[in-house]
Length: 190
Ligand SMILES: [Fe+2]
Ligand SMILES: [Fe+2]
Image (cartoon, rainbow, N blue to C red; front, side, top):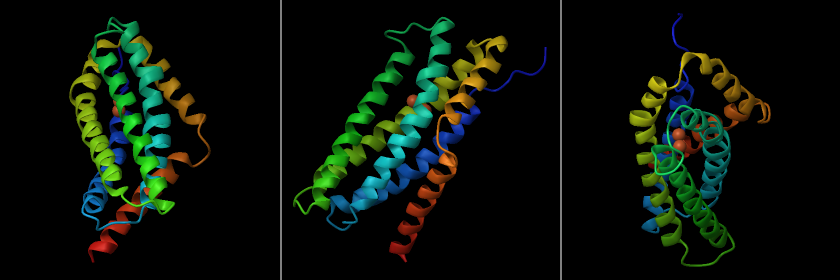
C-alpha cells in the first residue's frame, strides 16, 4: 500500500483564510458596536467573502463530498457530528443574512443599525470559530481515520470538480479581498 492520500489539508488551509477574515470582522465589528467604525461597505465585502468563499466554495466541499463520504462509511446522518456541523452551517447563514440586511439599511442612511451589525457579526464569528475548531480537531481527524484509501482519489477528484465550477481566479480573488481588508485595518491603526 502506498501512503494514504490526505483528504482534509485543503479544507484546513481554507479555514486559515476564513479565520483571517473573522479576525478583521471581529476588529471592525467591535468598533462598530462602539460607534467608532461606520465603513458599512466592509460588511458587504465580508458577506461576499463568507457567502462565496466560506459557504459556496468551502462548505460545498464539506456538505457535498466529505460529509457524504463520512455518512457512506458509517456515520449516522441524524444526531451525529455531521448533523451538528450542517446545523451550524445553517445558523451561520442566518447571522450573515441579518448582518447584510443591517449593513444595507445603514448604507441607505437608516440610523441605529450598529448594534444589529455588530451583534450578528460577532455572533457569526464566535459560531464559526468554534465550528472550525471542531472540524480541525475532531471531525477531520476522524475522517482521516474512517475513510478508506480506495475512496480518497474520488474525494479529491470531487473537490477539484467543485473548484472547477467556480470562475477562473476565484480563490485568488478572495485571498486578495482578505489581504485588502487586513490592509485597511492596519491603515486605520496607524
Ligand atoms: Fe463546516
Ligand atoms: Fe469547514
